[in-house]
Length: 309
Image 1 (tube, rainbow, N blue to C red):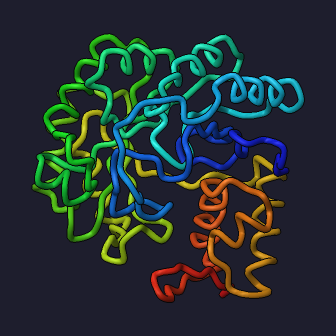
Image 2 (image 1 turned 90 degrees about the vertical axis):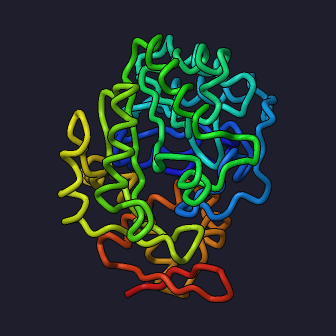
Image 3 (image 1 turned 135 degrees about the horizontal axis):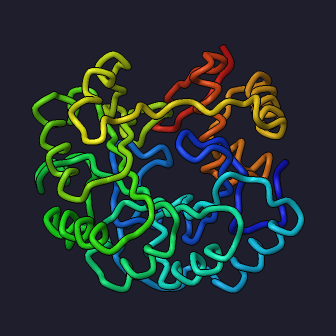
């Protein structure tokens, strides 16, 4: 169930790639170097490249240690959440603590800071690093990911290659595709060609499952995703749903959220506030309910409301 006393942990939540994942959030909401058009958490108010201790590292480690002693049931301990974790100047200290735990660690990063040697050194402490690549040149990078003005696509690729050359763990790549924007075969071929330069151990194709930051960011049909899998080496996997049969807690949280939505349409912020859940956690449950066709979305004055079918 929810942990209202935790300020930096959320979940464990159902993850399409990491099973039952305990989220560890190291930044305030939407503290990021990108403003991706497909982001499920909305727009980035102010993009930043400033690396600092956005939250107290000792407090984060204390919370993780408490969770490990009182619960400790997860498939992965994951640095993720509402921003870019490598912006936290001491994220490596958190990964060093996780490295000594029995549950594997994962770092979910957009990869924009991997051109920095100290970021690569810290990131290498994770068991799995999942990076993102949804563009093939500077123009497409600016179109899809809307990066900070000082970020260059070439540096992103150079950082990924430098990290791969030294990293001994698992490097996973997520390619987020949008209908009519970056999902044409010729464009996906360009992304796949770039990905071979840093040799990911796994490739996942993903698309819109929850309301994105921009209305024009539309989902790619499953048949089209299947047709694109073979362009990658290794062949890409389609991001699949998490089985709620593995966790009564996940089932209970879904049911509780659905009951609230059945009473009245709600925004993600309404649900976050009502249950004291992390916004990323709420988003995952809403995505599962949409996939089950139990709820629908309505946009009103740029706000997204969730309503029961």
